[in-house]
Amino acid sequence: MTSTFNIRQSLLGHQARILGNHEAIRAMTNHGTTVGDQSEQDWVAILRNFLPERYEVGPIIAVDSNGAQSEQIDVALFDRQYSPLWFGHQAATRFVPVEAVYGVFEVKPHIDKEYIEYAAKKVRSVRALHRTSAPIIHAGGKFRALDPEDRPIIGGLLATTTGWSTHEGAIKGLDAYLPAYGDPGFLDLGIALDTISFDHTPNPVEGEETSTAENPPREYRHDGNQLIHFAARLFRMLQLTGTVLAVDMTAYERHISPEG
Image 1 (tube, rainbow, N blue to C red):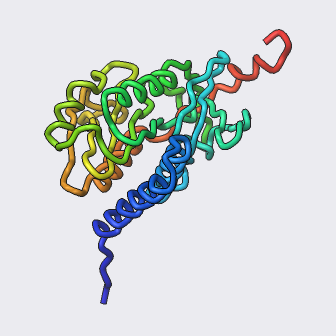
Image 2: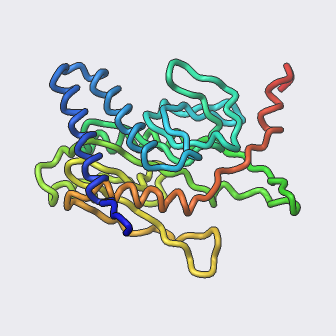
């Protein structure tokens, strides 16, 4: 006889543990850095727990082949299976080629106008970097270099609660303050664990392998299942992304020589 596993209850229990950890550290100290560090660690843990191992999760600074760098990112999803991570790290923060980045998230105690704007600024700093792309050699031949526009970087905001007292107020505030689609700081999805989640999950265009519908509608969830919804929608976005860009090594190698 086949036994059953309650997926919904498992994810809801995990959400409760994350909230419990956050409340415990906040009860012990009002030091903002300590609470922030704990929240980032909680989010790294929860994303690692439900994403396949192909996705590395942690704080990064993204860099490009022109020598530019992003602001420090609290939680990023990036590739280490196919992408060289040769720039090392500073403390717990890795320097990662921007071509290796799937998504970037800002972690804040709650979602409000100020933190939405701050998260958008962080996301813009990554999307503004130059991404190279190279062909991929395989046993049957060669895949063409992908257009970076077909591999958009996901941006989001992770929090425990919102700055609004009701679900209706949160929806009204998010509608008012989230960057518009097409803005480099556009946030594809976000969550306040105990309140609400939002996402703009694109659907594939029928008959197209790499294209997705433009300006997907924003959806909200605030029925206690927002973590489940957030996890499922993030994974759908990653499925649509596929594999990250192949790094054009020649663009980085030119910096090795003194004349580079």
